[in-house]
Length: 353
Image (tube, rainbow, N blue to C red; front, side, top):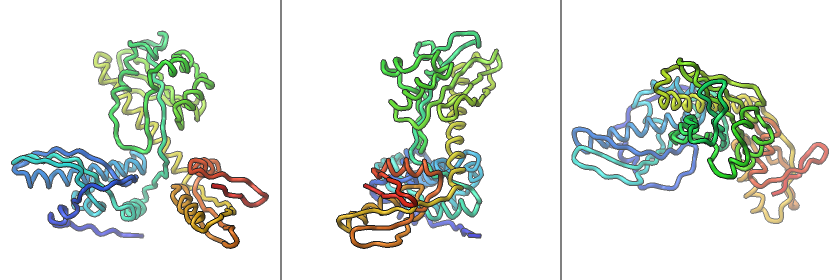
């Protein structure tokens, strides 16, 4: 089993990592704001960098795995965290005698982090950017008519205040627009009108749609019933205990718990799919060798593709085996999103791009 050794880098090395900002677009890159006060500017800057490392590590790990597994790494020391940092770029900064403020871009070392997660037996979810749309319907009492678009819908208002944080899973409330209001009503959402939910998913380019039915649970708190388009009418019930007199706080806690629940469900589903390994034999016809080089690059950029094995090449034709994790349906969808088309012929596919 791989054993990672940790050491504490000198402060000088921390500052050498700082460079002018460069464009990054990666799961392992995080944009952060820091604002730290200390005995002097140098101490404030050092503390800000340490804080940035921890924030970046927590955000990236939260992207890659479930909340339960991410919590297992919360005891990491500052000295250990430094080993996972590949680069830190300063987008902008300013300081006074005792204060340091900056916009930073922190990139973690993918290979080291993956090795460490494997050592700790923490499974990661290979997840493309996903969008989940929430339809928050609300009742003060079980017998009340459900609210959705009305101003009195305190549950919808809480979702509109949901903090935005970096994640591969975007969880957003349905937009309050005339188009959305025409698509679905509170009553349709409550009875799980599948046709209406499918229209919401289609028009919002969403991977799934959840109806979050919230009702005050007497004076004891909040009861939230979750149903999704993908899971049918199988419901999850979340109970938030607390004083109904503090409704705003109760509802915001509900937003947080629902978001965590959905994010973990998506990640667990992906972790389960990642245990499935398969392959397809494919042929690609090309006019120029550079066309194939570009196609191979695009195939390898798909998160689910583990290997593109070249079996034969020549006369404008490439014969290959594409090894991937997950279901056939998932790899086909990923290929379509990259602009590929597959046509099946007996025991092989013709790959078009």
